[in-house]
Length: 329
Ligand SMILES: CC(C)(COP(=O)(O)OP(=O)(O)OC[C@H]1O[C@@H](n2cnc3c(N)ncnc32)[C@H](O)[C@@H]1OP(=O)(O)O)[C@@H](O)C(=O)NCCC(=O)NCCS
Image (cartoon, rainbow, N blue to C red; front, side, top):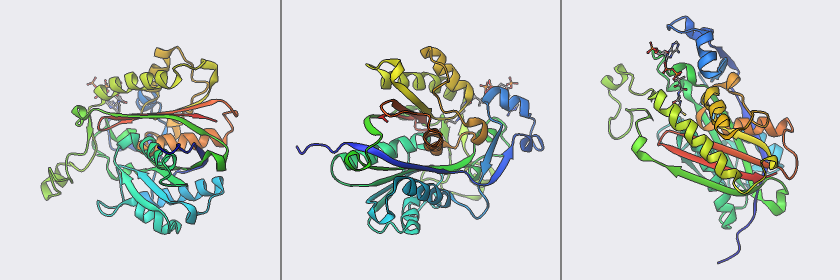
């Protein structure tokens, strides 16, 4: 077997739509309060896409920023993978729209359905393609317009979500010289498929007047069960990524942002503090596949990691799915 190519992170980019929606917006129509939302989730606000912005538009801005940051031309990208649960259309893929608008003429493009784990799965896929010599430069994206699939009458779920996009350009380490991907893991447990799901609009229950009336095209959550799963899985994944390393080697931890309390509880289990953790849920809420790349971009641009330190990303979500990546910066 040919030797695997070592892969690095050449650049990152992110984008949040302009419109900021504070918690107080929900107080107008629901029995909820800014105080409850902050105390139970850590969320202060979220960004919602404009009516003429879809997931592909957010993706393109994040991707352009990542390409610029990486110094890679769109024509040199040979793979685009978009992790999303809110594609522009059921058909074709959002990745194809992104490919066209970027002018990435030489890229293969497809979407990946792993919900909140979407970016980490896209990242693992991009890394595997480059490692195996099937691609040279991969553009991996996590992007969502969750504002289009929330049930505004359900106070237990609609307050949790926001819109946004994040992207990374992956390249051979010999070219980009930074961020070597050391390990990626992915997993799933489909027996929990209904912990977080959208009941209608697929082949089980195609769209009908009834499904619209029953709000079955919106996200349904079993919040407490997800909470327990999330704390356990997040702490296990962090522990796994740091196995065999001195805890001091960790430079930056980028976790999926579902609930501030979930992050704190996972850190608590591991006896870790939040000092090296990127937490931006207060500003963006849960943007599903976009939380990890948005937080990654924020942490890197703020210079929060030094050369040689470890960067760990962890995500989990509907499916159930989960994944993690370990990078030597
Ligand atoms: C949803 C979540 C914030 C709820 O927090 P919690 O502390 O577990 O709260 P509970 O579900 O125990 O609800 C406590 C009470 O607050 C109420 N409540 C729920 N949402 C509320 C809101 N927005 N405002 C005010 N009260 C609310 C509940 O109805 C419940 O009332 P009751 O005690 O009279 O029944 C939390 O469970 C969570 O973050 N879960 C994971 C979310 C998720 O699945 N995200 C997507 C996956 S990636």
